[in-house]
Image 1 (cartoon, rainbow, N blue to C red):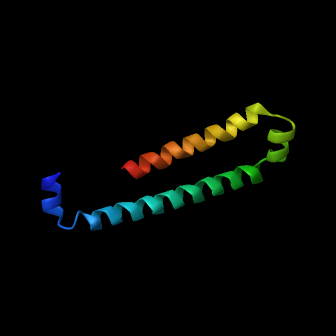
Image 2: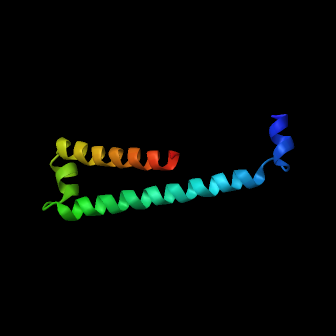
Length: 82
């Protein structure tokens, strides 16, 4: 810990701020991608997703939408990690 403080100067505030800002940018990018993906799925289906999942209790459709979102999050996480 002392080596880190000695080499970074003022407790590494610049590094911390860069990391924080990049995390915020990636989080916003992820939210935008999730919203766009959900809109594309909604427009591509000939029926109402809300009605099918909430009123008709279509579990298979809910699992499919969830798996698309999980797949997207895995891709986004891998791209962030490098």
